[in-house]
Image (tube, rainbow, N blue to C red; front, top):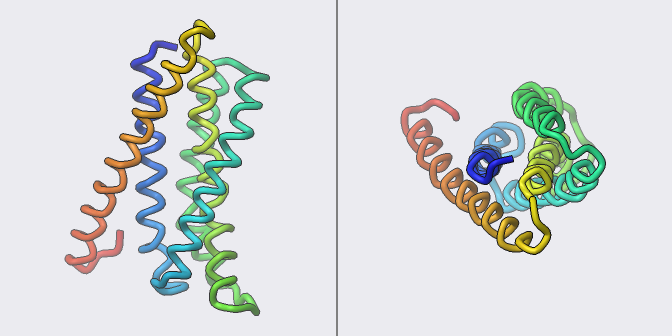
Length: 173
């Protein structure tokens, strides 16, 4: 894979992941409120999803080092993200007999873990497809993850900007 393609894919995947994480607070607010519990659950679940996704993405990349693997991950991540709204409505409607904190964790986990996990699998596959020489692996991985982090940063501010604007207009993003 060409390095520019790797940059674009990881930038967009990370951008989308942080947009989802920021917007998750607005998505969950009508069901579980907006509290420290809610944000703790969102951040913890998303980070766990990304971490586990990266772990399994590395295994997947070693076993199936092909652009088809990446294509499937991109397709599955899109489907998982599109499922967030209906899954949230379904899961949040259930009456969990537990504390508020655990309700937040359950609803957030059931809604956001799978999309986070699949998106977390993308970067290791991209790295595997981009590496040509083990001697320059550190440089390639470092640059890809730097671009990925830049995507996350820009996604964070973009989501916050659009989310705040829609909130002020009275529409929930």
